[in-house]
Length: 433
Image: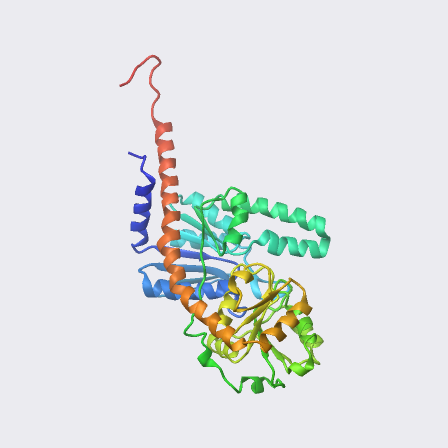
């Protein structure tokens, strides 16, 4: 009776997924004033769940103080946390007891963990207390390589950096084996998990709002509004201005552009490198506009520019690149991370990681070529292949049911084992039919 087939579990999971549930997003990587892919994801998922499903959505994020805001079926829980050193827009939750209390109070059917540090284990411990909880992890960054190795190698040397990366992959293996399902944002990010024996995985492409990010939002007066001179290309970057994003390479690249090109650059975002880079670039036509909270204003800024530039080598998906492409921009970037997937031939130009001279040459080449045509082609690709509805249809219609089937199987096996261990042993020599 307790032995059901995989198909039965899948059917049961799909049935559950169509009934009202409490879903939970759990992350450290949120900031109301820091942007970032996860902040965008949380906002878009909230809108989709409330618009297209009967589910409740609990989102647990760091904040300046403990606060729970309930708006219909949306529960937004902020857990008081201190700012991250060097990234003042972000906070890091250490008070996991508060998170455990929230999870115990709301008893979500599914917990989706969106970052690798501390909180995945809070979810794991909750599931041990409430075994019918389904756990899903978003492996959104290949953090052992993109974060641990990069910082370790820069500060402590190559050998120690490699050692720390090896240890971090071990941590990832131990952590993500506890989850019912894991999704990545690309096949490349999926490979390290497979090498560690984690095979219950899917790829979840993210999306972009192509109505908001649209070439029609172009404002001919935007450049003058920023006080930027020149009649050449207006380059734009939108994202954190920090070491991980290699924002300093963009300033180095800009210095290599010939003055005759008449280029200018706007860097939209905040981060620990913003002030020092602004000081170092005081003699250049570069505007550091800070983080843009208004998404419509961000869309206007992108559409009013000519070329999107990024030196980020560890991009796991590239939502900011998609937004720029949706706004009709060609992209000049590097051959690292997900950038080659986002910028195939005809949509821009890529060069070696950290080769700022090559990036400058690519900017010149794109501008001298058919930059507008590249931008139109880029938008066509985004409109045809990416959209948030498609993302969440796959998440809730395929990934969630797959994880729930694994969870149901796990609970059934646990129940069967308990039933078997509780059966009285038969006397020696007694034969049963």
